[in-house]
Image (cartoon, rainbow over all chains, first blue to last red):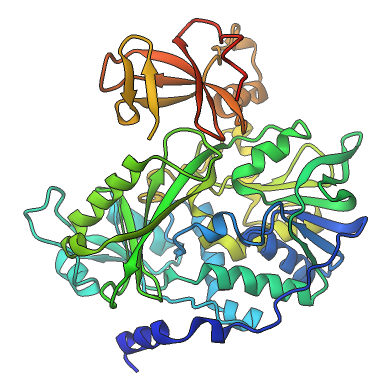
Length: 410
Length: 96
């Protein structure tokens, strides 16, 4: 079957039929657990799964203030790639990509991971290709003609304001079905004994001096040997309750989809020259996003001129989209660090661990974030992959500046 | 889109403005006395509340002057606009 035919078949597959009927229990929270993970998004669920699978810690609860995977996990544009500039970033995102490649087998659910490649128009492109190759990552430099072969609807003519001079391409990159990813991790964690508790907001922490001994929730106090925060945009609000300050700012990040269209867009295209990223989901809608709204905000919505700007960028790249219509726009709240790299590690409080600051790029990291955060919680020390990403880097000055290399956003 | 009241120019649409983050963060009075941890706090750590927030804006496409505002980060409702250097208004600073 050709790649195109396979993509067509993927799109026609009835989505619901691929999901098991039984997903997870909805248990009442117990009074005590070995480990509590705050936040049932992708990262929290993956963390609970790897705590059980890799470290044998199964007496775990994942506590969620809303519904499972209803935050940024439900609001992102599902792009997966590992072609980051710096060694530290390439290592952790490539670990994620390798886990993505085996995820359906690992979890027993098809998460529709589609390695259709990601094509990026970025500054310093050839430099990044070389850096990626040195790190063993499949990076290629495409000429404008090769760009058109990879994505025929891209306008590579010289008449555009920012002509396409070439692009980087990572063939192993792609997209996945975000809901299936969350539900697959949730189901697998549940099978291993993890309690997934929704509508249970963590409002504070139980303290014993500088030791955290559990959490206060809207459904009562819960004692825990280990507490891991995986609260994304609400990390600061959560950490404030214990007097912990985090180097993150919460911003709205918007995305949109078009109405359903025939397959026209075979890959993923990102451009920071005109600022948009675009793919076509399995069902057929064009999925687009851009950068964050400039101000801090917790409202899960942003300003309309940001949408207008990204649609103008999309039209410059893809004139054929002029006749597509926007079906829906939405916003999430992303926690952005000063160096556009995440924070995963210990805190000044014993038994309290933090995973935050993934900003606009958390989805692609889901398996690796869970993997290294579980390791950090279970062993009390960072995994080698998140050792460069602990809170200490802001004091030592060893920042991992991914602003320039992360293309549009992540 | 936010409607922002520049203290000098009046009501203008958000695209005329650029954001400057948390207001009232003074440069360290005695910089040489700071250790690495204190420098980190000054450079990289800012408040990030879900609620009223005193923040800086600059009217980039207008008078190009900086000013401060108090905005609720949950609702985007502004409760105060005031010149840079002025203290945060007591009566406009907390209501949401």
